Image 1 (spheres, rainbow, N blue to C red):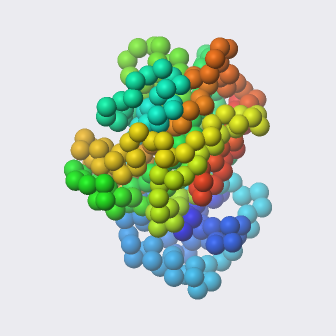
Image 2 (image 1 turned 45 degrees about the vertical axis):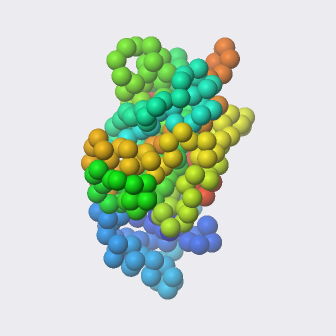
Length: 286
């Protein structure tokens, strides 16, 4: 299933994208929202599937309807850095022996087509197309990759926007360059895990002002999705509705020759992950 949330910011309603790929169906008569509580409730998800298959869900008029983040009340956003061989190479960094883990605050998450704000005094705002993993069952100390995948509710397209000067040149951890407002567009959909049989066989692409900048595949991940989930569960408890951003392929501004083409107000970024939809953001100065 492709689950999403539509409406004005803070007042989104749950919806489903029909099998035809264009028709929106209203889920508000069945569930209150798309969140961790729903993803952990197999019976509720089965009711949605049954209603969709029976044609019982009312149609939503999509004209002019904003798409919000596909997940409400996100507990935490865990991020994996330097997780593609080609990205590590382009930035001149060694392949990590273990996953590099950092966090983005859940309030950085916005809708897939919402405005992204370039922070005040920023000179190195950068793009990163990523596969996001959404947790569906409480996970702690998982022992195998098979067990890890069994705890995944689904997947989404994520844009891990970064401010590289603040991330890498201002001391301390990466968090200063990762947690500016609007720095994590998510969606348009949460695609349930049954529709993504192999998360290591997905293409990822990103364009800036119409020019293709990133063109990679999750097959190039250093630590595959299953290992990332298993690994992270050794250090923290993952709860339904938590999100893991699994890293970005080569092609970011930071990895390009001088003058590096960092983002500015007025730029347009478009991105997609195979089967998970497409995003488009216009950048504005904060």
